[in-house]
Structure formats: C-alpha cells, structure tokens
Image (tube, rainbow, N blue to C red):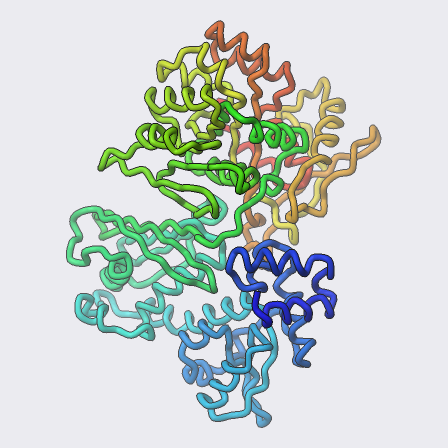
Length: 591
C-alpha cells in the first residue's frame, strides 16, 4: 500500500470518517484487491462517499457540496471544457464571477486537474469538493442536453454518413457522445441491460433497472443506422451486415469501473434492434448476509456449504439471482486450503483464487465434459452453472459421492419440484436421496426505497393475498414478526425492521411512493426471498417412494420449510418490500 493511500486513511481517521481500529484492515484489503482505498471503502459500504470527500475537503479547507444544480451552469463554460477531460478527472465548472471560476472536484488532494483548468480557461479556479457520483451525474446531464437536442431535432430522414464518418469521428461527435452516455447513465442507474429499439417515428432506449424495463431516452429515427453502427464498431461486429443477428462484446471503463458489455443485434421489420447486458467486472461480491435471509435459513446454509461432500441445488427462473447466491456461497468458503473449480456459461464475475472455466458447446466443452475434467484436478468444491441433462446430473452425483461438494442450479418453480426434475432426467431416487443435501428456491423482489416508502395498516385482503389465514391471523402475524426481526441484511439493513412482536403490537407495512433517490419508482435495489428444503429423513423417505412434488412439499413444510410466499411475507413485514412485489414474484410458484 502506497504512502498516499495510508495518508488518505489517516485523514479519514483524524476527521472521524473511519474508525481507527479499521484502518489497517481496509488498507490491507484495498491493497489485496489492487484498488484505490477510496473505491474500496465506498464499494464495501465501509464509509459513504460523501463522508470520504467531506473529510478530504475539510483537510485542505475547501467547501463541500452534496448536490450540483446543472441548470445554472453557463453553456460557454461547458463548451470550453472537453467532456473527456471532465469525465476522466471528475471535474466540472459550475459558475463564473469576477473572483474566478467555481469548479467541482472529486479529489481535493489532486492539484493537477485544477492546474489544467486554470490554463484551459485562463482564469482563477476556485475548487469546491463533491462526490464522484454527483459530479459524473452532473456531467452526464449537462453535456447530454446538447446531444439530446441535436439528435431529437433532426429533420425526418436526416442521418449521418455512417460508414466513413463514424470511424473517423472523434469522441466529441454527438452520436458517439450520445452512445457513450447510454453506458454512463446505465451504470449510474444500476441498469443490468440497455435496449435500443426502433419504432416508426423514433429510436427508444429502455433500461432494465431492478428487473423492470423503464424508457429513458429517445432519438430521431434517422439516427438509427448511425447509433447501431457505433455500437457495432465498439463490439467488433460487421457494420455492413444488417440481415443477420450478431453477437459481440465491449469492455469499457466507466467511472473507475471496468464494465463488460455483451452485445446482441437482431434485424426487425423496423430496423436493427440492440440489447446490451452490463456486467461490472470489479463489483465487490455480495456476502450471504447481504442477500436477505432470515437467521435460521442463513445458519442452515452456512452449515451446508461447509460440508465436505454432497450436492446443493439453487432453483428458480432466469434472472432470479441464482448465480449471485452461488457466488456468495463460494465467496464464503473460498480459502487458500480449498481447491474450487467452476464451469459457467458465461463467466459473469471473476473470483480471486478460484479456477473458472467458460463452457463452449460448439467445440465440445460442455458442463458434463468440464466436470469430468475437474475430477482429475483434485477439487474440493465444484460449481457447475446448470444441470441440464442426465449426463451432467450423473457426474455431479458421482462427484458428490466421491467426496466433493457440488453447487449447481436447476430451472424449477420451487424447491420440491427440483426432485421431480432430476427424476425426469432419469436420475434414480436412491441417487438423489444419497447425494442431495438441500434445495434452495429463490426469487428477487424490488426493495422499497428507504427515503420515500410510506407506512400503512394492512387490510384483511392484504393478509389473505400473503397467504395468511384469517382464522389464525394473529398467531401467524406474531410468528412472521418474530421471523422478520431476524432478517439479516448486512450493511444494507433497513431502519424499519420490526421489534419482536407483542400481542398488542399493530402491524405496519409499507407502500412505494417515489422520490429523486429512486427515480420516482418507489424501489431501489433488489433482495431475495427463499425456500430452503433440507433433505432430512422424512423428505428422503418420500424421495425413495418416488412421491410427487406436492407430497414432498407437504412433508418438507411439516419439517419447518417456509415456502416462497411465506418468506416473501416475512420481507413485507420486515418493511423491506411491498405486498405487490411478493405477489408478482411468487405467482408462478403458487400456480
């Protein structure tokens, strides 16, 4: 760790932003991950970014501002500062007076961007401190205004000479800035996908945020070929081929993060359609305590993943967070003493100290062949992205019976259905009962925004929708409140977790409202709801009897398994999500 990083750490301790006993640990962790101390503190939720910047601003004696009003920034100042310079250095001119130009800076300790601006503008610079997030957001909004006007106001049929100009254009060209801004805005708003869709009159851009597609930008339809071509150039695709689907990849560094973008284009009747999946390669991996488990299920899962052998299955539809859960499990047990190997399609995040292999069916490298090779690599733990066929299931069972812990996923609606799915793959019931330790079914629900969620007293209809029988409502509610009070959410713990229930306590639930923090959706982020079925003796007996999923589910619930909707009710009672979210997420499982 460099002297500069330690100096910053000591400033944060001296200014009360960081506890003294944590200094050495965070310095070592940042050095181990080879990232800047500030980035590590913010990404790991150890210290809020505003507190870090405020402490550094106090140290050098300059003003700190939390928000930047972009409407008052003069256009002549923006025209004088190239957008690339502003973004790379996280600086933005704000106002001009007879004293000089007031400029927002993200790093008060770095004098070089201020010196460059003094030469560039030919005026005295008055720095004020602001967070990188606030400055990057303001940069996007300020420079986007001009590009939006240029692309939206173009006359019908007007377009850029795409093949020559797009290759030769600098990063200052409006179309390139507009496309770049798609990525900046997507990262800022935590979008997982960007959809560029042509209509009869315009080009519509929608972001998938917290699992929902939300329209965000528009451009004149005449710019569609230029926009698509720009994306294709970055992804290394053939810009002249417009009749066939194409797939490619882009790697971009945005706001200090390395983002891997998977690009897919398809021809449609109205023009080419582009979908881009964003993966943050430097994302600080979630721990199990951040996923939203109740204490009992969290303790059970901790016990399961430390077992020396057996199979743990995670089930759910596409986009239900199965891979995130598996990564969190691997992160928990990843030590230098263990040899952990994974076969994935694709490798979404790189895990330090773990051997990760991407399957490539086109050349014969499948999940089954990959696992067969793994068994010759002396592994302790194997993760296989998905069990899709009999061959993969057989090898997973063989691996578990020969002393390996196997983690994998299945596509089923609930935990008991995983057993019948394996039987459908011609796996014998005795093989399942002797190898599978547990099945975890899960869904993702949107988290209520902590800033704007509004309390209300639920009606009997709300309780019925959550599956709470009116005849034993009080008893069930008291149980749910006790369980909700054990909800574990790591550093993201909400302020409204209920205290253990008393008979006189009135139940309070929460509605989404909408504010600036959550882009007026009422939700910010997602959290899991879970159904953990342990393969204990009663459940094992039903598996050996080749019972159907409903019978296995009934027995598992008698043994204490909490079904998906009931676990969703726990998150509702805990004030983490809403009734509507749980109903939407568990509808398929209930049907």
